[in-house]
Image (cartoon, rainbow, N blue to C red; front, side, top):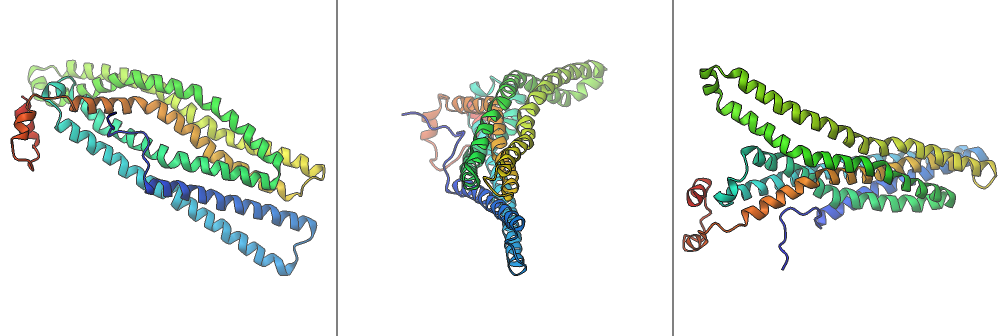
Length: 345
């Protein structure tokens, strides 16, 4: 039977499913408001909106827009962030528990900087990935499907334009995300060496001052810092490109959608309000699409962190040779950190 890892990249939880549905609900409300706005503009242009019907229609549009904004804040913004914080801390606690209970011969294979990296950077990156794949990504896919349905209701041509633009997002993030992943993998040992050097400097400060070796320690720390900073600068550049290019392309999608619908209006195939609806729907369409591309780059860049945590899990599962002694001890007693170290030493 395949071992079930403590560090999955996707978790099926009722709370995560509700968050994904809530995110899609916020998009549906915003898309409905866009259609209402387009209908109002078409009615005004055609002279079909009288003084008696204008006030209720505008108040209804205002209420719908307000509900969409509140839903976006609560269901798409705050609830996923809260779930993200909980999952990050949970991953960190799992990593600490594995470090405390791993065999001593496995523990001494790495320096302290390696474990500091696991319980801080790697664990929090893993928690972010889990929430993204379990809530944000399903919510974004549901939102895209809903927006395509709304675009068909406006005009099938608009739906076709949005579908074609979605295909352009993929290459915009693929190459930079691959570069970020490669740099992240190579940068990890340098980060650990930098953390180890900082720890060594603090622990050996008294001896360094007594021997007058402050310059030696400082120079070695600066060398580690410069090496880590150089690789991190390249990673940040690739990561910024992979996340900013899809987002900045959203405006271009809106322009293309408006031009296509303006041509439809010019040929008399649809009302002028279609242009307004197309502008708003294209703006909404760019948000989940850019997010999916961003999450693809984030997952690629942080896949190494998931691998490190699973390696920690495998090392903690190695036999210590004292399992029989543990079984004959008190069954309800959980070994403390000091007892664990004494057994494995």
